Image (cartoon, each protein chain N blue to C red):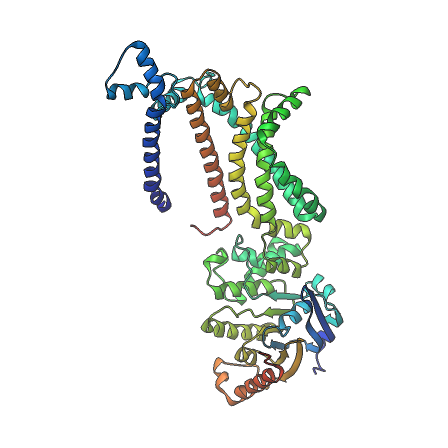
Length: 263
Length: 292
């Protein structure tokens, strides 16, 4: 699909079956996917379609039961050990007992960087997410949107080229969400990172992505992959254009086709 | 503090009620003996005089609150603190073994909890024994500990402190096991994405997350330590300490002494719990806790 740039994530015939007390549950089945450097790929689908599981497999937080996955040309485990990616969770997951700067510095401490190096990187990443001036605040002193920005700063602090984001703005209200979407695009444009973004919002997926992976449940699989024709520069009102709406309609069709309403 | 003012009126009302009830019961319980005295002396005082007498016996069945208060005041503030009759002296003797036992118990509790959280075999093998240890009545174990240790030449502070340790490690273990396991899966996953070592996850995540649990369990543990120290003084015929005062009071039917030793014990317990609570609040604030 992306012949020019080298693959950052490559999955082939990927499958994952959870053994539960109710018997095996097939969370992922036969997923083939290649993500090139600098892409912004969204995973969208109804709950239970395995989009979060797929992201967790890339992050080596889950082990696939069949097929192969490579990240930066290594196994997912090797990539994790080399700290190849930053992961942003659904909640900010900041440590309540650490100030914002010490939260952002957590991965740097774990990597054993010098104090000076830590301070410099903390400053740079907090600037990047517009949180300068909040270094000494504790998480509870920040709004939900600011907390999530701090958690993005934490994922960026150690300069991984890959950013894995699991519905990072799902818990925020729409205005904050729009704002953060805009900032995220700007950040992506500036840093040239590869971003994998899980969402269940069609406008969010279309607005952000260069490619949209539509997934469907039971078993979790890729049902459609849509290349975005939108330009890289995307003001918020691009969402009113016919081009945007056409892509959104394709995503919606893809979701509907893959979604079997059993009940 | 608002919470203090909110609690002041309800708590003092209850206290006033208790004092009134206490006086009523003091009169009722001391009446038979007072009747006996009056009959033998051939006196028949008026009701008001009779009631006053029931509240002023030297060895009453139930001392009146003011008798206990006077005794407590005299033995706390009017005696030199070096006197063996001073409540301050006796409280200090008990307090020192309480603190030693509490320190041992807290350390032991934390060590056991760390072991249980990190070693699966310990989780399965140790926990049932720890729970069983607390079902044994301490009153039965205490004399044996004292006697066995005395036989190998260990006497004085340490045996008493060990009984405190025995009682205080348990709440700390239970609280710390819970605390060290309190981090959310998301936080543990986060550490995993950083490829953090077990030691890093322990020090940077599990330990800070367990601190509130530690202080909650330490409040229970410090009160249990005091009970342990007092119980430890009972079977040994200890010469000093709140337990010794209780025992001596019982020997010589000095009921007022018993009650004022009891008050001293309660004051020490309240102070200890308060100190741990304040320490907990200071640590919480230092760790960026949200002011309540």
